[in-house]
Length: 167
Image (cartoon, rainbow, N blue to C red):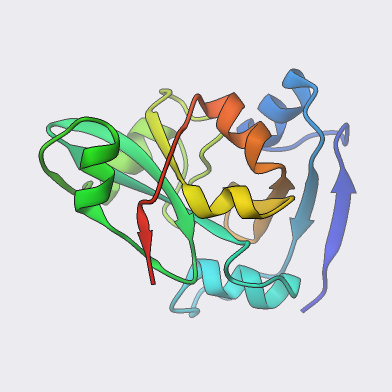
């Protein structure tokens, strides 16, 4: 699929790209043609962009002891809910209701970004992100990814780094 890139400072954008631009953070936007029948948004993004699935991270919203929490993990694996709860000092985590996740973040499922959310949620970034110079996360809509330094992502979201992903 075609790949298009834009450097920061482009006109328009999503709340995620607006937040990155406002923060003065270096990033690249990658757009691709989203296939609504794709079974995995993250794997679709990795394939479309020609990027290893361990460098493309999905944004998941979980409920940890009654509080919505964002988990950012590689699309190549799964979220370990027990590890997520432990990372934020909680006891129990479950996947959040999709409607609650969309309403709280302001994004649609498959396009939830850890950046520029309507309500800033506690965020945990999988520790594996630190082994990459850059990672890709949703830029706020299906078919749009943003590539940036994992350090910048952690700083902008006040994320805790913890081993919350599993193969």
